[in-house]
Length: 267
Ligand SMILES: Nc1ncnc2c1ncn2[C@@H]1O[C@H](COP(=O)(O)OP(=O)(O)OP(=O)(O)O)[C@@H](O)[C@H]1O
Image 1 (cartoon, rainbow, N blue to C red):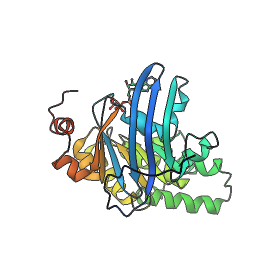
Image 2: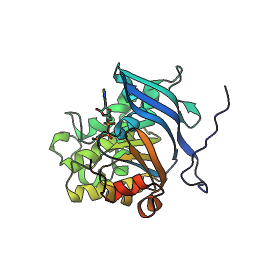
Image 3: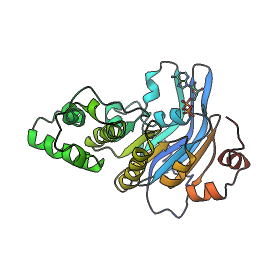
Image 4: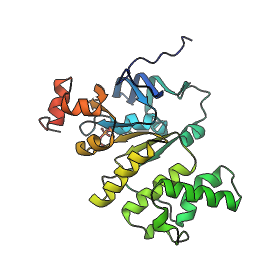
């Protein structure tokens, strides 16, 4: 096999390594092509936003990164996606391990109907961790990282459903962080939240990128401009433009990108 060579950097001067590298990646559901020859390098410890009109394939691309689309028997893929230097679609890839390394948070907060403590402990218990002391430490750490510890430390045994929507979303982020992932996939994580909770999630994303590589799908272009370092614009399953967020929003290279970010493209 030819050695893997990263090619498409959004910022050639970038000193951080490439965490995820997508090469000529195609995905279809049945006979319908959804993603077409995507080439994209995701830089470690930065936030990459995926933007584009409804149905362009943003969530499908995100879900390709932890092989969540595999749950559909109709799904067919070709091309390559490497996490560090490991081909995630190789037959030898352990999918449970991949999903531990690449955590995901969805649009609607989805805590389990359990206590706050047990929600965060969930993945750790699956990993076989039984020691109460180890669990306590890891749970405090994850809740602190998710900027929720101070709000819940005195009620860890309360049912997670008693938290507000914004707190539930930070709890779900803590649950994802507890198993120490390397990458976090966020699929419109704030679109169901009020403005104050949205701001908290955005601040959290900015904080978390120091320790994780983050990819966020968002419909909100102001949000993409606020939280991301790099932005990829997709249209009908094709990657139209990928570059530094500030450059893409102020001086896009492609007319199609300009039309979209200035609102001239009607979804
Ligand atoms: N499991 C599936 N089976 C068949 N088609 C699917 C499946 N999941 C997504 N699709 C189709 O793939 C296309 C891209 O969907 P996707 O959810 O990735 O778009 P999106 O850009 O995230 O859209 P939105 O912004 O509206 O969430 C859509 O036409 C959708 O209907």
